[in-house]
Length: 354
Image 1: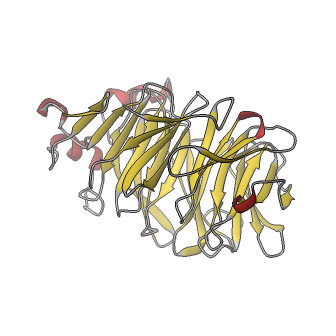
Image 2: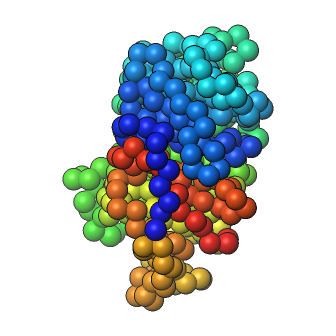
Image 3: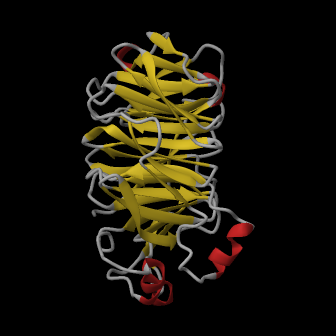
């Protein structure tokens, strides 16, 4: 069973982040922020001015006590050592912000919003230096590790884009509705009715591989090669939309969370880098290398061999509620998955040794 962290919020938790030092912060509706200690008790609470929903929280890469938060159209900077009124605000977006990302040199912050814009802020001058754009809501943006000028984004226009801050136009774009047309599965035929609106992105620690979760229940894995990226892998992860994907610090372990109430753990490392003309077809014919397992009510169970055709999750957590956000933290010496959903609590699940 999940351990529930309670007492930090009075409404739905929308986002989570974990600092390099292991501090956990959650953001919720109506401007609520909570800082948690390792035992799951609130160590600090704050309601941001304006009481707009807190939609994204991210720690500075170089200053582990500095926290960036988005609420409405505003980005606020806070010091978690004293969770009080924000130190400063940026107001560069014109519509509600959905996602923040800070590069690993702490020089730029990107904010994706409902207008489709991604505003890039120079954190030294505190000014927007770039406005990148999707044609519909931009749901997720992520800087690539070790490449402070490079970022990827996705949106409800079904586009996934690769950007370099020296250019205002994307270096490369893929439309998810066209991506994977080699797959003749019923899911592909049904894309007209359940289009692959892109909800979430995460970049692996190598900086060259990233995952995307979409409304059609699929997870897609891409590899960046120079100024473009190619689809490496595509698999049906969830029965409903994939709301969150998260690469863990290990090279190619990926968590996905869905509107079906499931949290799945995948090992895509054995598949990434294989040269295949039709990855979707060939993966369906190939058996998984390792047995999958399922966790329900805290118990770890083997998944039947009939489910092991193609790419299968190494772990299934039956969370039961639509997933708003996923994060991962080291707590008391072991790795845990943190899940935010429609409730006012944060659910914490243990992970097996990887």
